[in-house]
Length: 264
View (cartoon, rainbow, N blue to C red):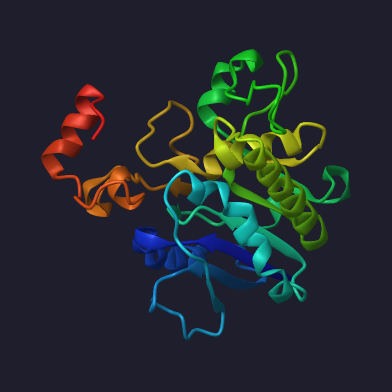
């Protein structure tokens, strides 16, 4: 089976690409033909000459426009996906640490869609406290009393036909919101959750994409994928990665931010 892995590394986020690629090569769908599509504006990247890598251009933009553009960018390369059975998107700060395979391939019962729950919201279990978009003027709106899961938009997949249909609908809704001066509370993720509201996706366990510094009892031993800490000083910190600041966070400020919940 041919599986396309879609990832975005525009601007300074390219720093995650090498670790993403190496760990995915080792652990991601080992029994299938895997090909990587990386969207970036970096002039040169590691492994770009590899047969299993296709480098596609995507222009970096300031946050939060950069995340709102996600589905438009993923859709822009659709002509390259025609020979692939499934497509999966993972945030570029993912690091795979254990085999991930057929168990996350969705079938007919799931509408050929899959999505991953955010562990922190899953454990709370109070649906009305999920951070859905509550503005009724937004196309991402989910009213109180509806919904069962809160999904991350950084990990999802589908059969290629269904994936492209999903991307097109979400992208259209985001653009229509823009025209009305609306940006959903959690940007692309809000629209992704609205899209999944009336679907029955295969739910990827939270252990497949869990922040590296979370030490929640009962989940640490079974982790298969880590979301690397974008706030960490070795990556420059959130503000630096997003282009909000040209100064990298120092190790001292990083640890102060962790210990005292101070934002830099």
